[in-house]
Length: 178
Image (cartoon, rainbow, N blue to C red; front, side, top):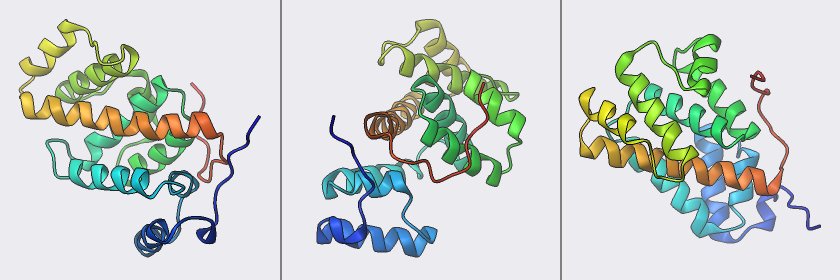
């Protein structure tokens, strides 16, 4: 069976190296998952561009972390659960809240509807429960927010699948098992 390893900077093409340099400048390092995606400059650029663009959408950074946690739980991605637990706590959530998000719950009723719908989208490959979609709109979200939510689920599913397929080492402290 072919083993996927985390590439060093020299093992990727010059376009990916440029993205690695930008990540190192921004984050202080290139996380293993991003480095692995960097085997393909197009895939890494797509992911980074999507994350950047969705960062200007309807959901705040904190809300995006809640969505990322529930999607990563559905997809059983240890890497993204570890990374997004750290990011969520840096954005002000408690460890207990991160566990609740992973289970599909939030104390804020509006965020709860978004998390529940994201979970259903991920579990059902886009064919989410209609009652959850209606609750999302009833909570005050609009069609633009729905498109952003689908984008958030999609980009995190992409990274989840990269980890599941590659089984690269997780370079963040492990998330609590639930």
